[in-house]
Image (cartoon, rainbow, N blue to C red; front, side, top):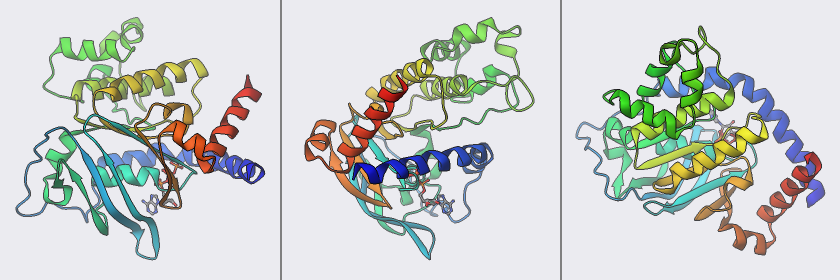
Length: 297
Ligand code: ATP
């Protein structure tokens, strides 16, 4: 089985690299444009967040009717807990996040937050309760101050500075010649992958959502930055209901539940030690990843 996974894993890396070059544009679309099919119901209600429990019940979904993507997916993230989705590229992990954010509606089944079906909620109230740290953060061609304050436009300057400090990007900002007024984005200062993620973390800290979606970067950050950012992400996930789309298994070791996905189905689930003991797909993915890390070291 291990032999079978190696080429698959290699293909996964290739696919990701090709995809990576397209993601900036793609993300811009997914973030800025609401697909037309999702509209508020005429009597849409405002989400009332209690603890922030997220429940997927027998969710099936297809982007195109002739190609089903998710099949009968059920899981619960109890308030304040963390669930991580892992699995091969294309397994449907990010689709879970897109459905929770309601870029699309499930074809079957339901998604509830504190018991409220998200189809009956106003999209504004739903999205106000959810923070997303995407793989690739879209920066506006504007000051770095604007880019962080965007997380909560009515935040005070002190709050914006505090968020930057907590996201470990304050020193960097203050070291720039134009400090907070530095223009970033396509036409301004280009930030590194790690810096962009820190901007996203600062935005999210400022927004302070009850529910968090973390889409772990697949792009190569240097190991030190990656470890630091992983630690920061886990820290902000600790106090909220979190769904982590993980590409590195080291991120999920502490998760309250790990969902191992394969072609749109959950094929294994449990905590890290349980899944290792089961000696199935997850245990093999783990062994492979450990082996790969040893080779690099
Ligand atoms: P990765 O680890 O590479 O990010 P993933 O597990 O998150 O992958 P998804 O992005 O959820 O996978 O995609 C699941 C499947 O849905 C893939 O086969 C993909 O091609 C397809 N898909 C994703 N977005 C769309 C879309 N907008 N329209 C049609 N198909 C899509």
